[in-house]
Image (cartoon, rainbow, N blue to C red; front, side):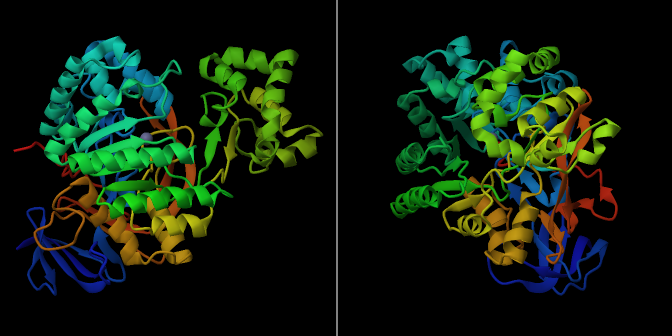
Length: 557
Ligand SMILES: [Zn+2]
């Protein structure tokens, strides 16, 4: 008797070959039979009229902290994701000495906009090594986790405060190599590094102090295991990104490792630079280098209130200083002070149209409810004011809890983004799942891919899109025995309706430890998600308590 049969589905197996109809039989967590199954089973899922695909893999996330209080990494699974990669962008929660905990929390807060109170309320710090961290999260996992080790964490462990001050000595590089080897032995899928991010003091993160000997030395260790390096490139500058592509290509060729960089955005009106970056990836790929550009499916939308510092103000020093380092009282005082206010408005004025296009998305006072959904230009006309004044006045009236949405800031040209997503050298990812929780919902990118780019725009076939987010991602990341619906593969399966699959609207929930809020999205069209052979989520009944998630690739035997 089988454990589970998925009946009558349209099987899109992840290989890219055309969909075919059939049943899938599962026993002991693995696919044991595909065809017309007559055997009996303890459980049957009817997939008539639905697509049966391998579970989706989300290769760029920051669920490191959330996994400590939520082994589902909600709401990933309900969007069809069965494997997540945390530890991106040089930041992982292990290895980590007790004296560096608050430093790392500060970096997660600054870079990934994770609230500090969530760490205080949600995290029991009972690990130091990577192996101990893996043990800790493994104890209640419903989703599969392929964790990267962060280069900044390695540096902090070996160099302490000097990690943020100088290059490493030859001896320190040797120590970091040994430490990385331990992490890979304990189950790390690779290492992440960054050339962009800043820490809680607005200084370069530790890994940015590394010289080429250090990065080379660490990639040599990755080579011993054939593991990947992920790198945050200078995404705002095409020349620097092209140079990083070359650097990654050399590392890939020298140490036989896969490499990936993210993000790569389509800036509207600047397609030439995107084409140039992709052409360079193609050239390097032709040399045999493995360099994968990671591209997100969703357009850039940023929401904010003045309660938390937003990325949107990063390039406006007076604003950013005020909202990053000021208390709510200081922000209110500055908005009420006519000189300070004048200065702020003058600094923001050159970005004029952007402010007018902001949409008021949420208020708490009844008197402003009618304004929700309007742009600041529209509200300014009603009030005989200017968009920036309206933004400040509404924030004051709402005790800084007026929420604004800046929609379609870029990466929203469907044709061009679709062309990129379909490109053979592009990995679909960069969701940033679990990060930036007060700026946008990092969920639903796969639904957006299958709804917007496959069904509506027809820029990828269903088989091609599924292959990209399952088999290809597994193959690039060295995640074995997953990503295909074939005999003996582990049964990670997502069943969905291709006529409706999509991402739902973004909304605010209060489910972060410490009564914190975050933006999430529901999925549309996902029917059933199976992880390690057990039903983990069904639309009709919600989550189960199955805990079949594992850490991948797992300990080196
Ligand atoms: Zn990231």
